[in-house]
Amino acid sequence: MIPSGWGMAFRETFEKRVERDGKKPFVFFRDQVIDYVTLQGKVHRAANLLRELGVRKGDPVCLFLPNCLEFLYLWFGLAEIGGVMVPLDVNLRGDGLKYIINHCDARWIIVNERLLDTYSIVENGLSRIDHRVWHGEADPPGENFLSLSRLMEAAEEKAPPPLAIREEDPLGILYTSGATGPPKGVMISHFNYLNSGEIWAKDVIHYRPDDIFFTTLPLFHANAQMFTAMGSLFSGRPFVLRERFSASRFFDEIRQYGASSVQVMRRLCSALVGLADSVTEAERKAVVQRYLHHLSLVVEHSVLDAEDQVMALQEDRQGLGQSRRRVG
Image (cartoon, rainbow, N blue to C red; front, side, top):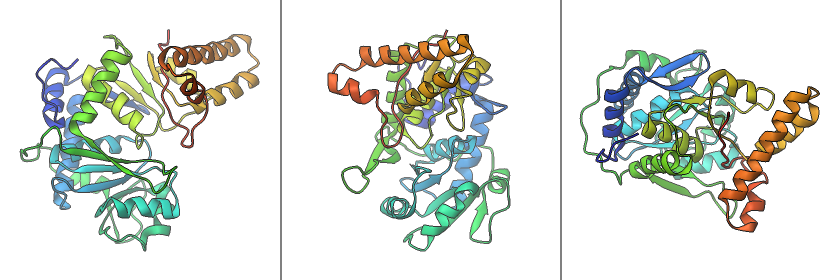
């Protein structure tokens, strides 16, 4: 865990974690294991390439990316130079997407190759974007985009110049779903992020020294950012990042990584109910049903208001929410 007295701006906290746990893993993604030393090098490269593109303290940068390691590198790189991440819901389309990009006043956007068509539809209506960075295996589609992989390769791996960043400085702008009007941008400070991770790891799940966290939730959402990623940074316990939720692979993936603390979404319940109905093997069917029972118990013991309990077991518009249990 982070000892008392550690700073609550990201860069200082991150550097101390690297110094302490350099060769320990921070994240498992696909077949890659990223330790803190490797992570720091990637983050420094991201920070330096963002500076080369003109990003300065307080500047918002949009990330239109699925779950991937580059999301973490860019987010943490922005934190090192005082930039502000604006994560975009990959399910956004049309006017909703255009509204958020314009509203946050960003001049920079990183776009994943699978989201190019979605982005292209709104591009002409974007009032401020003048730097476009391409994330993908294929070459960028024309001169309008710079290649993130090439920028990362060319960037220096040394730490960017020191910068006075306070704990109350913004690190992210997360937009609401817009259920009651236009989406609202919520400013998340360095302190908000790090303090949320500490509370979640220490006081909510009471993390253990052998824990491995596991999430299939999208990194554009506060849950994966503030609880899983920041909780891992606070506790020094690694996490497994999956690209998306799969009911059929869910338990196999947990076993594969030996995960002990799982972040899930409300719609997991309905997906697992469907899985339980389709599983013919008695032992696996019992496992799914037992997991559903535990999820209900988590809600019963953690949500005090009766109306909130009912809502917590239902799907929400984004299919997101928080439940958690120990596995094993």
